[in-house]
Image (cartoon, rainbow, N blue to C red):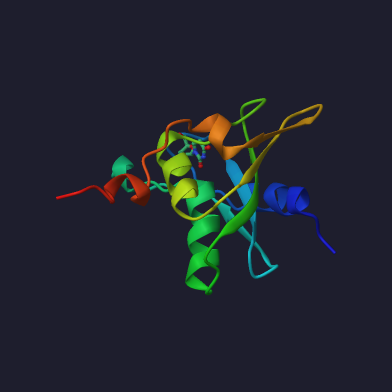
Amino acid sequence: MMTLFEMAKEYQTKAYAPYSNFRVGAAVLADDGKMYGGCNIETASFGGTICAERVAMTKAISQGATKMKQIAVIGDADYTYPCGICRQFMTEFSDDLIVHIIGPDDVRSYHLDELLPFAFTSEEMKHEL
Ligand code: THU
């Protein structure tokens, strides 16, 4: 069976990145026990771009998964760290997510809390009116 890291690498080859020429692949392991892959997808209107991480997560969620357990990311940088929007998205759909950044020599693994400390979540909106 394909590993999460292999799936991220496989999806990097699917990237549609004609504007940045920066290819990213991601794969998530969701709470349904399944793995979902994604790649970055750009449009000529640059703001219409979506990152590999969010493609993988939206695939999982749209198939019925609710929480992500692990995510692996590989991009054209030596170590491609998720952007701020993706970190916020990960926060919404996980409780204790492990983020694996696949590099040339090793894999660096983090808890999402380390990558997005003091995250704004739905908990913060439970204030007294
Ligand atoms: N990108 C990702 O897909 N994930 C990241 O973690 C960093 C950035 C994409 C967005 C855009 O298509 C290209 O990389 C350059 O920013």
